Amino acid sequence: MTSSAQRFTVGLTGGIGSGKTTVANLFGELGASLVDTDAIAHQLTAPGGLAIASIRAHFGAEFIDPQGAMDRARMRSHVFGNAGARQELEAILHPLIRSETVRAAEAAEGDYVIFVVPLLVESGTWVGRTSRILVVDCEEDVQIERVMRRNGLQRHEVEAIMAAQASRFARLAVADDVIENNGDSEALRAPVQALHARYLELMRAA
Ligand code: ADP
Image 1: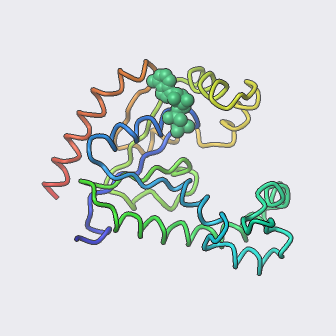
Image 2 (image 1 turned 90 degrees about the vertical axis):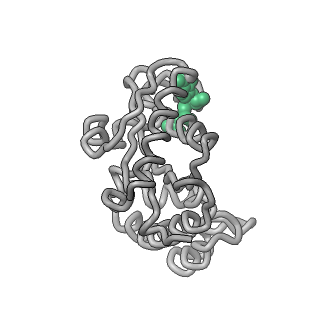
């Protein structure tokens, strides 16, 4: 198998509720392998996760719950407004997320790999790491309605999350490819199929 450095890879991002997961799953149905960085980050801090020993050593046993997972609520309030603590946590998690995503990509057997990275633009370390960056884009009002429905949140709560994320403009500025997701989910199939065909072409030409 070729190494991940040579493989054709796509970084897929978009704002909360833009439809990243929905679009990624459609690519998955066509034969792409999906590597979900949020799921990997979650596994690292779940019971038995690779980050648990470092978190215990660095922050103390009180940040590990009785099941052996990171106590998310406690950690969230600890790093809230505490940039130093947040950076320390990120210094533990980010290299592990990176190595685990590489490992997952190397093990993937699909035609090519799509990394689903909600904070691709914000994290800064992804730009240049993949062959293409694909942004799922939609109108902010559509995004807000979807997240209110999916997560049972109030409008102002969704707006606060969106305000903490990169702007649409910043995401579109790094995009090689864009899929618009303002319509119904059936309308996604044709653009996903077209882009999948293009990715196979680019992969073979590389
Ligand atoms: P993200 O992963 O970017 O947060 P999701 O793919 O989870 O977004 O989509 C957010 C919510 O909106 C989900 O409940 C999903 O089922 C729904 N959704 C996504 N795209 C569409 C669409 N085109 N039409 C209707 N509902 C959609």
